[in-house]
Amino acid sequence: MRFLVDQNLPVGLLDVLERLGHEALHVKRLGLSTASDHHIWRMAVSLGAVIVSKDSDFISFAARGAASAALVRLRVGNCANAALYDAVRRAWADVVARLEEGEAVVEVRILPEIN
Image (cartoon, rainbow, N blue to C red; front, side, top):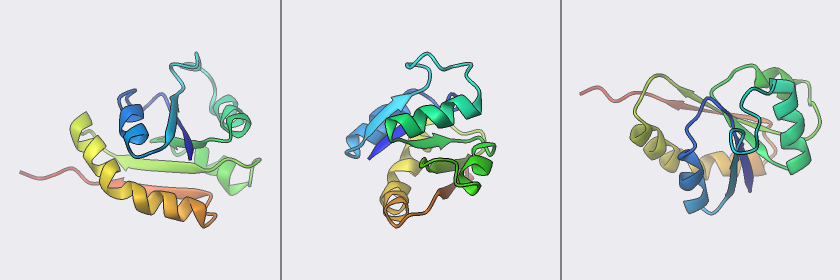
């Protein structure tokens, strides 16, 4: 599966997704750092990619059935990248299964660890 990672997530997430067996692109590396959400959505459609973002604005595109892209919304607060990557690794098999079942929006809550 191909994923397009939004600007609000670290480029390092690409390595995590690739190690899980997926193709991953980051909007920053595509020169889309300042692109509108609509432009990023259209790019995901053209690439056949699922958007991965913390941004809730993409939900409206998915809810309208705008073209054929899907969204994985990571609901994370402020956390270290290592904690984010670990949480993604734990959740990703379920995320992919839900996308393959046709869900247009898959939300993943990543709760910060309390020490």
